[in-house]
Image 1 (cartoon, protein in one colour):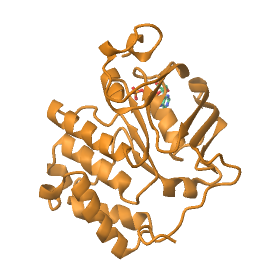
Image 2 (cartoon, rainbow, N blue to C red):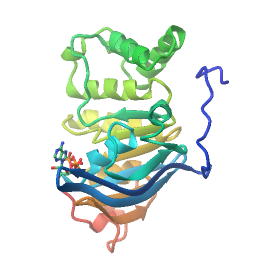
Image 3 (tube, rainbow, N blue to C red):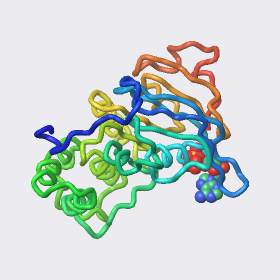
Image 4 (cartoon, rainbow, N blue to C red):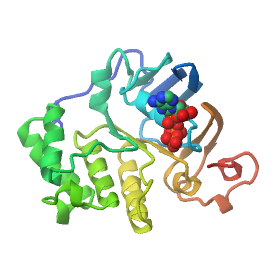
Length: 255
Ligand SMILES: Nc1ncnc2c1ncn2[C@@H]1O[C@H](COP(=O)(O)OP(=O)(O)OP(=O)(O)O)[C@@H](O)[C@H]1O
């Protein structure tokens, strides 16, 4: 048992210790329409993976399935060896999720909301208090901890969304379009926060913005019309102009 988390998370059976997420033949249909089809990829422990694609490509569908919020029509996903359908509780303990639209309670202040989220996740009171202090510091919300969420700008709400996602110290962080709709200064700050978090955690980031994934991610998968159409490994921080023109994400028409 670790002093920090209060419990120890064991790996699921038959797991390659280097692999944190394994996606096999993932397929999802909404009615007759395929949103993703036969998607395969793995994410290494500690890796920061970008999921890049235009609107409607299947990013949100994949993120929802990865986090155990929606079962796939076909195929399987494991996180730390646990199946997202059969072991969804184990998966949720390991995963922090920032959905595209964060369901924040606008009538609560930041601290009360985080406390409420900690209670929902069955964290004990002492740990909730300690973690609230930690995440408020990490997400640079010190000046707003007593502010009603409804009064925060979109950028600060997004920080609250990230704070709730990391509250239970998940090993994996899944961020769906984390900078969409926020102003340019907040975009820079949010990206820098994600870069900091990526030094400690496995991160899957979905985006339709090529420079965003180029800046933050070590590896990029490009999804188009529900299929992975390209993969590229890169140095985070490299600019599209500085990378090869043939085949890599720099040359892919996105969005
Ligand atoms: N609840 C739903 N019911 C029916 N079709 C859906 C639903 N959600 C998504 N779709 C369809 O599935 C496909 C993939 O959508 P998805 O939201 O996963 O893509 P995305 O890459 O996240 O796009 P966006 O950035 O616009 O959210 C699209 O064709 C979309 O219209």
